[in-house]
Image (cartoon, rainbow, N blue to C red; front, side):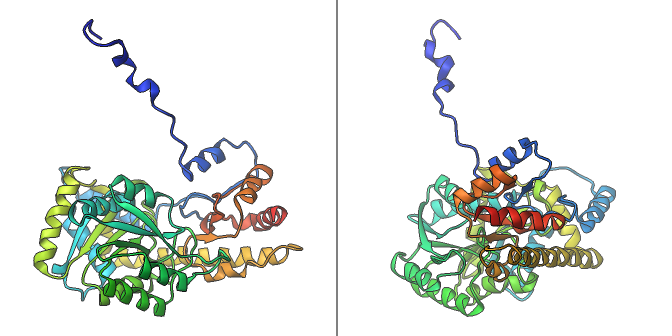
Length: 405
């Protein structure tokens, strides 16, 4: 510090307030610090195998070996990412018959990056835009959209029973609260945190409402393959596109490829014409350039390599289906285990929920008691990561849950 500088200049950061820990990642930090031998972490949304490990898929290992032998550069990617990756994403989301010149795909650092790029695009190109989020939704949705400068509103989703979709209230809110040009965030499948999805007939009504009211569909698609299968899980999105000429899809391959640390995602923007798609893509690139400039290569290369190789694709689909069926089995084991607990409530509703997460019905106080008394870590909302359940400890888990209810 020079003599001419004010004394306070060296202490600008002293008055910065301490931020609260992340609501979910903070739980994992507490879990890691817990010295108890018997404990279980059902908070963070990662798939775990029977050994409690988040595994590397065999198809991913094979693709990485192939890349090791053939990759020739670590140079920058284009702003919108790897062409082969973008092609693979488009086909996975939209099928091979959707007009490619109406869908612009931009590779992003994970699904979170995709949501932020989408939010920035809406804020700069479609203002004034509000985004309507389901209540409840993933905890980070609101923070991302607010950081992008969007107004954030909510619409009804889960019913008072905290077990099922209140579709009537959902439609009423979207009909009465929105105005043309607003964006509506929808979970394409495996709703996080509840696991409660609309039926096919309800998707038709949602899509029709979006189209007739001139709303922008913003679909978060992080769990394709974990609900009813790859194609079935895309049905809601494709129904929306049958009614709406425009939409934005934010997809992630952290879960269905197990590439959590590689940050592999995409924004797919669908417009009404090839010309509008090209213009929108040019603006998406401006957003990216001012943010992270261009995406990382490795994760996208893995996905592109797997999906370009028929044998690796077959291997991937088989591994993903194994994950999906195992989660279904864990749901069944937990529900059956709770039926054995005297006086415990019926948890059969969990069998109707899809994906890695379930709303258990636990209150924040009960979640806290589970942690302090039994070493079972769940989010305060009562959301549990079904994939985190250890088959060998289901009885122990059920006794713990019954004890706090």
